[in-house]
Image (cartoon, rainbow, N blue to C red; front, side, top):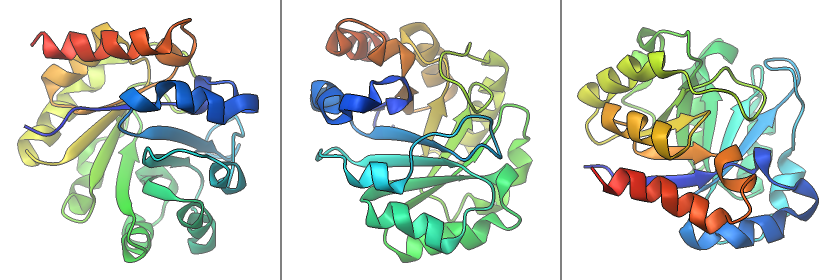
Length: 215
């Protein structure tokens, strides 16, 4: 069984005091998740590599590029900023293998993501070269959206194809939906609103973990 990993998403944190926010959760976090949006692929514009470079934590940084056709130099900015893993979107790249190979050549874990309506078939050719697949469980963009359970068959199929691959889910993750995704085969859980918008973030993380341990 692949290791369960919790990745608090800073999209729902207070960015003006981000290092304090991360410090509060880092003891119980396996990754810190950064959603990078360029206003082209999705509406909002969020943080950049300069922001990521100012993060002070020993927890690995999980960078999710919701960015149209990210160039080598753009990706390199996040590599230099300390990214542990970088995820690109199948929908935004003409040839995702180009970006995947560039990331891996720089000794960073590479992942590919698909939106809820994108078929798993679109990324099967990349499964042998990526370290992780991110299945979006909401439409990319704003935090606080409702979990789309209809993508779970993709998670199940992917787990059958790749029993040892890290499968990440992002969007609407809370103790209840994390369990649904876990039972389908996911092992990496990105949670923003359900952690950072709670008064006690540690309790919030423990509630997610406890829901998974009950199985």
